Image (cartoon, rainbow, N blue to C red; front, side, top):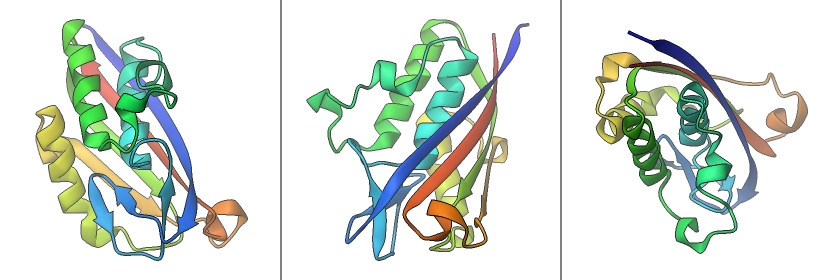
Length: 158
């Protein structure tokens, strides 16, 4: 058996009156992440972790922000496509551990739904998907609610 780990990072600008999708859940908030797709920072970090672990480059390589096919698309679709790329190389996903960094809104009530969305998209148990959240203690662009950041690590097996 071969085992690899991967690390992912993503950041998106927050804009007033824009949808805020995280982990496939639309959050009720006055600001939302802005990007080419639905700007789901959590799923983008997870995609990058998975792609990196499999040595398949990064999310921007596979889903270019200049390609209209991906404009406004749900990042759950990008995650499913990422899993297909891994499967083509014989990789399966062991677990995912992810962290969100934002001031608001509170993420904790939404974590079970996010875990379920991710589990449904990639075919593993919610027990193998950890999602945590923290603030930036009102410091920097995160503290001023100008942006949101996510980090993810994963384990894949062949």
